[in-house]
Length: 123
Image (cartoon, rainbow, N blue to C red):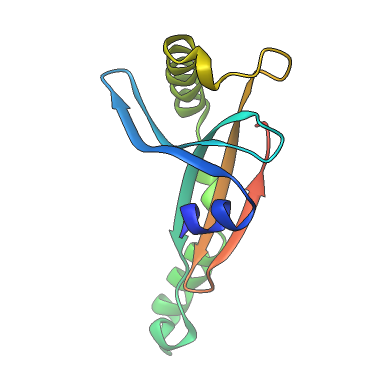
């Protein structure tokens, strides 16, 4: 879903699930302006009305879950790992880095089942 979204925005996907012992990059892409972009994807599944039921306990649980966002799952520790892994990838693959534009880290926040995607650039 995330890759389809980016391709629809004219990004070129270079790699997915790039793993190293010190971190992981969900998607590596080149944006339409030829900037190397490391995309972190955070997804949360919101409960539907049918799943919430009628009991007070179920309704309270659903309200608590509904208040969460995918963005809540991007911690400062995770961001530091992303930055380190991105920096190492860019250093190993200078052919993808535009000297004037460099590279950036984006966040795709996905809410299911609504399939709502929010794209944050240069986090």
